[in-house]
Image 1 (cartoon, rainbow, N blue to C red):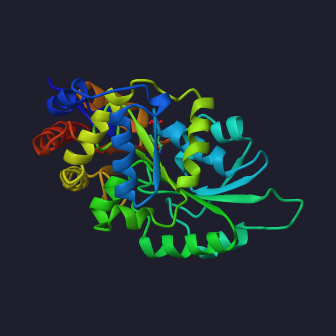
Image 2: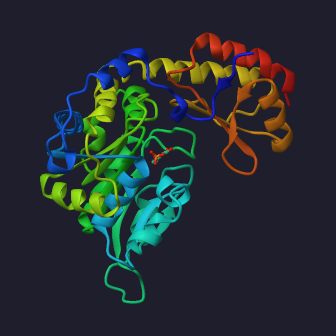
Length: 336
Ligand SMILES: Cc1ncc(COP(=O)(O)O)c(C=O)c1O
């Protein structure tokens, strides 16, 4: 029985075309700035996101944390979204590496000016200095939702006016652009730094990139070196990312359609789906998580819990529409 792996869009394996591009990559020593494939990837990401510069990183976590380190000093406060990756899933790095603390705002991955305004407290010496606003788009733990553009503009304007730096965790910004029809550079426009992942929906095996203003490029490279993330002939992996930019963005619409179909099918089986999927994630609670996990694994359908009661099914490059139908047939056996 074929395993159908809905645990994450990180489980994809490079396609034959991507492997060929990686095998044939022209490389050099990237710590000397001499890897043509890395340089091409950085230029391509900077251009797509409308930024002056970009820096290649081994992972999304390192990319995010390098940005937090760039923008903050020990004791500073970062304002983030409810359930944000930088707080919940990065092993305490903001505290451990940058000595910064994170306060979350709003619910379901979104907050507005009414939550942001009172959270910024300049000048009170009892309070940490509020230094950075960080948004996540799409938002992972909220179920792949897109941060609404009008709200983003309002909160970013307010934060900028208060002198805060702005960071976007855009690990899945590609999904946000395809789902909303808003261009990548428009989604990225207000932010000083934007981290994007190549190894999620885009299907590359490794890699993230931070797009930023030119003045941030060297400081980010220094922080990357300090974190141990400066790589040598990294063009081999950068070539996979370049291939993904050219071939795997538009097809995310298929993943989104597959997620909607999965959501409809699960709802028809009696599962309580949390809203219509906006991108490639379907979220639903189950009454007996342990039993559901065991049953689904036995059926060869791999879905992971995201917290104590909720499960998250993610569609991606290695699952097509017929896999979704196959999964729904199998899941009929564990309907609630
Ligand atoms: C929103 C978000 N940001 C950052 C990351 C971190 O990426 P990585 O696993 O490459 O460290 C992830 C990973 O799932 C993510 O979902």
